[in-house]
Length: 198
Image (cartoon, rainbow, N blue to C red; front, top):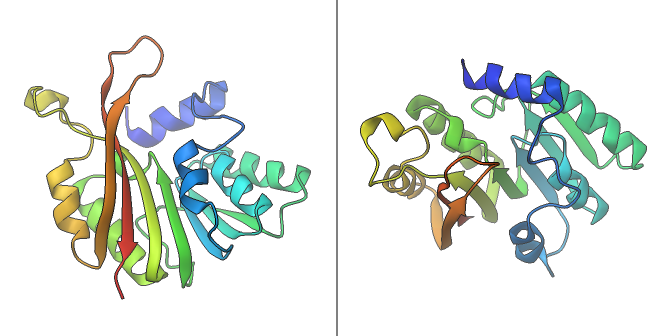
């Protein structure tokens, strides 16, 4: 089953474990005291982070490739009276040609780790194009487990991610941890705070 089909099935059944009322605390803490500007939410899902940002005065573009997610996110924005501040687009994060920068903040909570190498390179090029110098790019990703066999390497390779984003970005901070969903075994994950270089 493709990543698209797997995610579409989750949204169709209403079994979306990341549908929480508030964004992760790493998002709110990272933006505390920062003036509102333009934000980009990559793999926005049902809009949890984008709607929070809009409620704080940000102008937000959310992008997801699952039609059901985009439709519901826009409906939630309308119900919250935030449709003017939060706009949701169906599309691929590897081709954001329908958007124009500059953005002051970009967020990805669990999207990039599903991309193949070519897609990740295209995603990086789009962030280079869209983010202004000094903009924060906050990424949460599942990471490959160096102790596991090759068959288990289905997420992001941290060394490869760091190499790719050394072009045009500085890495301010990384926080490693583990993620567990339901009764599945936990796997390595991390938050990355990148800064777009001038």
